[in-house]
Length: 618
Image 1 (tube, rainbow, N blue to C red):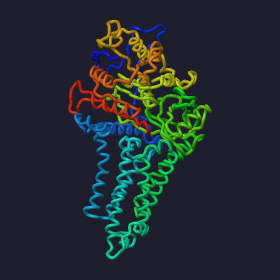
Image 2 (image 1 turned 180 degrees about the vertical axis):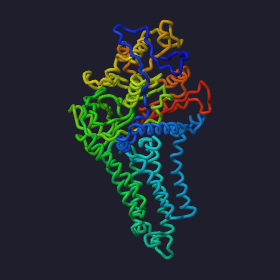
Image 3 (image 1 turned 60 degrees about the vertical axis):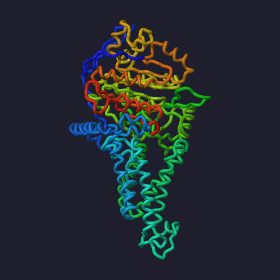
Image 4 (image 1 turned 135 degrees about the vertical axis):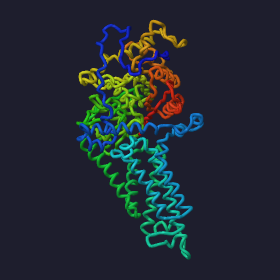
């Protein structure tokens, strides 16, 4: 359904009005409290090691300084999201290339410089030593982008490790290529522990033999093993099948190659590898010994959600007891191990609950061997021990800044709804309790299974456990909240048939309701046509605060409506949070580019959609 164009209202007016269509037994009116919202108070959670260090000291003036630094970081990051590909060209390029931003280019420039310098020291001015340094630098970048708890990129630039996977892979490939260049220079121009190898082409009168050359001296055989280990690691990661369906084998070989590479670097006379080794070792110590081994050992309740197929579960929900002192931000994820399956196998799972909820809620879809065993476990037991490391992750749009982002659009597909649930519920809580500015939260969810919608209804707090166990926060934000009531009223109005979609204007009886729409708009799209009857029956119910539609969401219509709302409300930026299948996320990314104004556009009608894509497979 298309909302009519709204009357222009004051930009700073965030008050709520009661509808004249309130039902009987209407709840008490709740007034938005005075603004006590303080952004950036928990931004240190993006890097767990820094949070462990700073948490005891994050008081008073120090917290103010840290918050100011995080705000500055967010301001500096905004220009980094400017796309470098013009809109007229973007339609002819793959989505991941068309979405390249200034920040992406800045990150890959050092690697490109290493590649160019390495080629120069190979084919223009051959230098065994300098060419080797270029390869070693790329290896260092690969390791620094792989660490999780102490990632420097996250701390300095707010870029979590999962968004550095592309850079990590690019640096690894560059290290292999430059390592091959280094081997070429050594073989053609000579070089081993005691001067030129008699097996190289550089020795006059020698007997060139590449196989013998590879093992002639410690430097040569350590370099050969180093290059083979790097190539093996890259090839394993290039083919996704092994990681998805044989994760234990993939992870074991990844760790073996990672350790072997560091050992060979020392044997290959690269002493600067000591820093990278220590940094990587510190990360492993914090993650496995401190977080998963000591601080975050807890229990979880297992619950099968969604429709079962032939008696087998496809979706499992874990309701995890919060370990003492455990905190997280909305949209983050944890790495989870279940000792009943494996104590050393950790998997990244997005958090579906809001930070203020009593329990940590995780929802997992069957994808590989580990998740299949988890689904089988959920059918045979109700509780299990779990180990957590994290939390990790940070949105690429600065949702802490409620001066900039008072309008948020969440688009998800299937189980990708989990981070959008967390972000949406958190924004509503901050709006209700601390007066965070929020004018519009549009929640769009495409599903194939209506049972999933009933099991994990959108934007509900505490839905995973009994009502008597709800915290005060969850109890206050319930069906008694004005946002819930306005969602109900809006859904009732469209079900009533008084809205003429062809005219795209409401009849007079409903105009007052739509002049000031609900802060929240939740629309669920069922993509399986054979469930049309189920959709009609669900829409006939008047206790559902969301609208159900058959088919796929019309992104152009959704974005155009959000843009019109932004112009009416005097807003310039709209945060878009997305998680789901690749095709859906590419479509959302294209829609953000298509409906955003040009960066040169200045005026009241300029609107920009700032997109954060949660990685569907971390």
